Image 1 (spheres, rainbow, N blue to C red):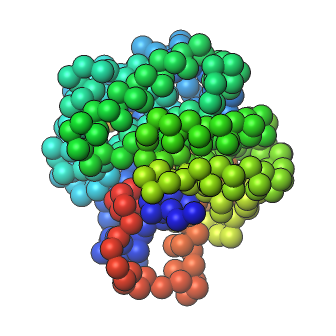
Image 2 (image 1 turned 180 degrees about the vertical axis):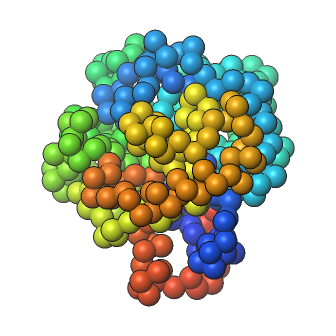
Length: 372
């Protein structure tokens, strides 16, 4: 099945200006930032990587990115040359009451904005409607297709509420003919693989634009209990192909085959992608990787956005010292499997070793080209 969003790869070749500047030794601004807005969540998914990043679930619901620094961050990001930001983070972004204003502020600053959420708290009034008019995409994280399965996988009784919020967004998108893309995301594990085909059918019934089925990221120590079972994913091929077959002209079921089947293996020895893709936590701190939100936090924190502007942090020596520290000291064999920067790292290593070229790409760019 064609993946018009290139979710299973990267889009750096459509940002050749930034890559060439990096190759020339320039200090380039990031193309994309994953932005956390809270340190809590209103549900507790079986596979939640946020638990390894200091996500305190309901206890952390009051710990959010402060409003004024957040809006300043959105404005500064656009001025500095950031091309896209996804409000996803280690917690549930809708726990932050400033989320909708942040979306508008980011888009008004020239940044492509996206939101990843379980959807339960999504506003169906003016704020939620206005966000849909400023988002490039919104993705609902759901790995269950029935109430019983939702309770088992997400530890929540809010299945019908989540579906109602998805339907609201679809109906508003269609009524206003908005360009926003609405998707579902399933995190595939051996414990929820039975939901693959039912969820693909549910996505088609809901009228969303796509369902993406992705790998479960886990540490090499298998702290979520998944890494040690990645060899089982080969046995899921038939069910995944059946899910893909639910696609229509208006609805795509996208399986991230490369990451689902690679057993967490890496072909590159170093992390080179930090200058292009950053992470900020739900308590307003900036990092090269979500792995450092909780562990080795002081060593790899680039700055505190509640105390400093993004512009100041990006220009600081501390920022670039951390970039080099990651590049020169991190053993990627010990990093969590299939991290967000994985495909970028693979390409940049091949580029530097002469195995890949930064050639012009013929034809139209993929959808959501700024979300590298």
